[in-house]
Length: 157
Ligand SMILES: [Cu+2]
Image (cartoon, rainbow, N blue to C red; front, side, top):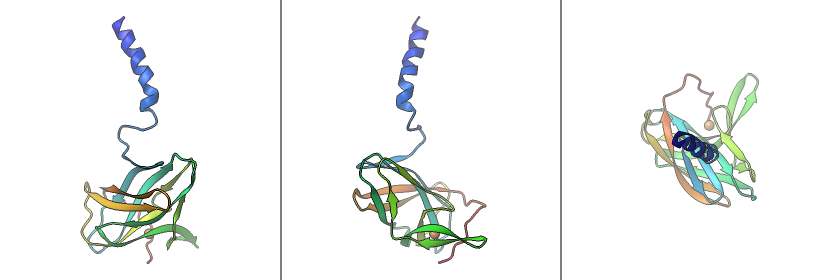
């Protein structure tokens, strides 16, 4: 009897646990949710990409307009475009975040670019990055540094 009751209670909790997995890293900024920020290990003086998901739970569109980090001399917002057989990076002035939608920054697509790393980014570290949005304002998130991947997009700056 008590076992069955526990199971029912657990099942009742599942919908709450479903949308945000326990291992997701989520930072809230107004209606925005910055999910699972990460980067790849890279050496001092090199550059690195920043990847994350921006969810907008609100009815107003927003835009990511800039990013800064003490770990980088400067940062840009980038996209990839196909140039023949090669994917090349291009700066963009902003990254739109649709109302009631999301945008994913990922390798090979839109991403943050950390240029001129002021220190090495080592596997397992966290790199603070401050994101500035046109509507929601600023928030600082921590990029989780993962091992340098075998697949690295062509970087031209
Ligand atoms: Cu880039």
